[in-house]
Length: 441
Length: 188
Image (cartoon, rainbow over all chains, first blue to last red):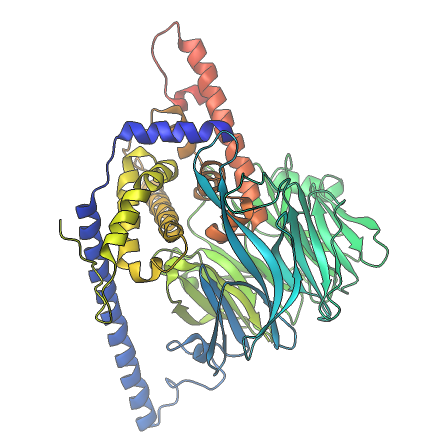
């Protein structure tokens, strides 16, 4: 398929016989700009009316429509809207951190990852886009991005310190996360067959895929290369090991001894049977894993070649498990930092096997098995959950809609009442594709 | 034709000519990508719209090392929006028990195979196998995990291969009959 696709699409395009039409582009651009101006005017009018209403409520002593300190608001900058903590938002060209009530700290040429437990530092990857020749059998240059350095950025000053750099044959990979005690960093690691050098030949497909553990103080680095392709990994609850996925099996890599043990095998036992019924297991793959804050439950997003995906929560104490609502593709999921409650997005397939446009958000209490649902009416019609992240206290959680050309919306939900507390759109939505990196301390 | 930027900035003149040069240099590549994303019938419209929106934001895009990345991102978003609109309409049509759309199935085998993919699968396939991005880069562009991109990619390749093989097999059987069947008929 890979070799056939390019010439076939080129042939299709040439048969369409379309030529550049600059006048058409100009007319469309003008329409687009008019639309933008209209929307800006509508937003301005709405803000103005909101200010009048709030002012009126203050004057009349009506507190019910006023804004309560500590509660999310619905207008203004992100920092004035979030009820606690600090946001990290990443766009294609830059990113920023905004604290509640604080000023925005912007950063360029860094790819944000996670805020430390203390909130003092943020992990980020620096990257180099390199133009190389296409792979064999293809024509034209391609841009390959290499994450060359792992850095920690001071969230107050923006100053960075380098935690590690790699030579041109290797790259760091997402995600990068702090260990539970904040002393180490876990980050993806990949190697090409050949170095990635500007103007040179294509380096080939990554043939070593693993992870690195870096000491945040001594900067010593350990990158096990013989574990096989490891696309998914996470810290163990105590930070003494790395939980990783290889060929549909969840393993644990002990950092002190280097030994590997098996935690969960999707191909065996009752779990395999349950998955076979739910999503089919012929090529079951685990797209994401996360330990609950207590360390008792491991959540996995399991998908198969049957166009179905399901969150699975395994109780590490006895091996029992719960399956969430299945959906046609991997869904965002996140544990509350305060309790073993998993938030995840999901939606059923329609009978034709297509993705159903209606989505829902679920809260699964791992201990009791209770499930609560955030109704679609709360989120807004057509809202497709993309990222989910909890506030530091665990009272709120935020969900971002999939980035779109004109609108990228983030909704903050009260985790107790399951009601939308605020919703707002981010700047430059066309550039955003990771709108909710972290809701840090 | 006199070239003027649609978003003239009072603080300074935008480089209109650089946009036109950019447009003419990149049209072919983006149009072909659009063909892969939405098919021949809708590709020109999508590519033109993506370029128009790039031009409307040219003051930002021109500062990027590779403005085509900006345009590509818009094209991907537009393709996704189009897919979502189709899904909504299909869902409404299903409720009303009417024919969802009267749009004819593509006749070209590769176009037909691509049309059967989900939006995520199709974008992953075009980004990785047509444009040559690695899964990490595709993940960044699509805004999902690289492992998810790989899952979509594997499924997309598998599905396209199966459909092309089915088409090829059926074609061989039909050679003596002389009538070329549609892919949908071949899969029955």
